[in-house]
Image (cartoon, rainbow, N blue to C red; front, side):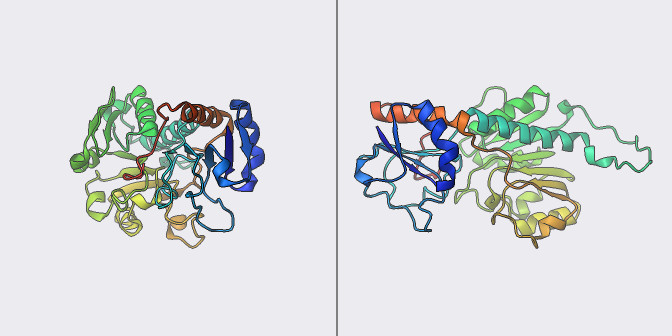
Length: 306
């Protein structure tokens, strides 16, 4: 099968060896006649001249396999009619679990409450995990993995998704029950995608539903949160802290108020990365499935955007 590597050129040296090792029957190409390709492996930033990729000439392509978990920068392309699959791989999920678990434990234990200044502060002891409510917004592959890890540590975990589809070991509330999910969230973890329904989901009225002192961990998409409302909720003391890995504009501008707010921790979109060694086998499996006419892994509903 002929496959176009439709990703920025700088990624070729990193990805080509892993992809060809995982799928040796594939001819991986950097260019060629569009109608000669059976599939595309895609990452945002292609083509590199800034133009929007026209999928229309790729008449033979049976699948477009994204190298990213987020697909908001491709689903709006009106020329895309081929099946699109987002990337969900073990390394990506493990990275997200480690990030969310690390920051959730830091918030839970109050690790920042003990400056090394010679003052003995033993008046406040954190509760056990079983006494702490954590809500996870978004119960896809990543949300389920993070929820399972939190449950394993003993946290009282509530999941929330628009569908409310059941997940073993976690109470999942449906879309209409978002207020209840927020009221339970002493720690709120957001892993939601960027869709019209999720943009500004956490506005001022909804942020006010969170318990006083709640901590937000956003590793989903920056468009979820109304930034001005978040800053107001933090500065007023209603919210305790926000750990933010994703933003409306990336890189986050140096003069953005998040950088200097003592109740905000900025991390530079590093919560979870797609690693070639774990992602290439997933891409290879989808390429084989496409060629055999079998159901694809992690296929995107283009009408819903995820």
